[in-house]
Image (cartoon, rainbow, N blue to C red; front, side, top):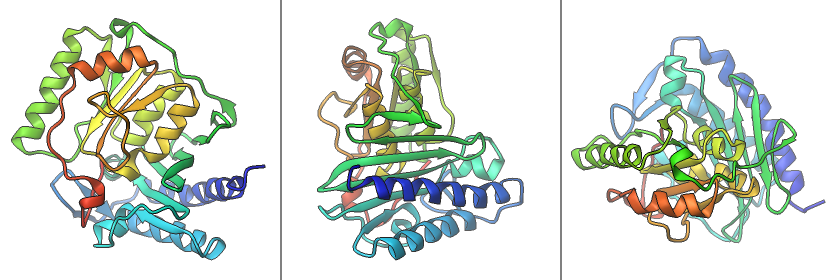
Amino acid sequence: MSEWTECLNFGVSLCKQTGDVILSAFQQQKEVTLKSSPADLVTETDQRVEKLLISAISSRFPQHRFIGEESVAAGERLQLTDSPTWIIDPIDGTVNFVHRFPFVAISIAFTVNKQLEFGIVYSCVDDKLFTAQRGRGAFLNGAPLHASGQEDVSRCVVVTEIGAERDDLALSTLTSNICRLLQLPVHGVRALGTAAVDMVQVAVGGADVYYHVGMHCWDIAAATIIVQEAGGVVMDTDGSVFDMMSRRVLAASSAIVARRIAEVIRAFPCRRDDEETAGSGV
């Protein structure tokens, strides 16, 4: 057993417990606060779930560090070190949660020496638990996951997001990227409203590509290792090596497809996560 398997199992149990908290609030009226934009929302449940997760993990593993979406939004410094670190998005898809659109997830990644060791994405409403541990494969509710392996870009389904960035440059880049993809052509472009659930569709084989510019490390860290362990590839949107703090990601069923998509995708400027004093998500 890997020395980090205990942490993974503990994280899974916490996701199930806090998933119940999210589900109990799902149909209720929410008190909503804006963060960086009118599309960047936070609720009391986001904050409560993050506090529950960090409190429980700190009690079990007191030497571990944390990067949490709501902690960073509240002004805590975002710093990824070599120490064992939990990267937490308590509700990925807060806009979905507010509107009761049924794609809402808890995303938890774990790093040591800045390397991803495991990831958990728990899609609460449909009770789908995606997990992966480095070198041990990826799973959905215990069943092995495999990316499609698709190498023909014209037969791909692509998943992306609009995100919270709404300035003219971000929106024009977003729409022009979609136009270029449709002209390749690809079979279609989809968006579920949660980066983590979007990205793990590549691991499931239901989608062949996921890309996004402007998300944060807590949105995609867990899904990154799930895609990789399912046999997919993850890189920067320009085709270079993936950097979890860059706020750019391209995940694909094969390196051939990833490189072809990278040729047409453009990125708008984003400050790196490790330069931010506060963050936001989908």
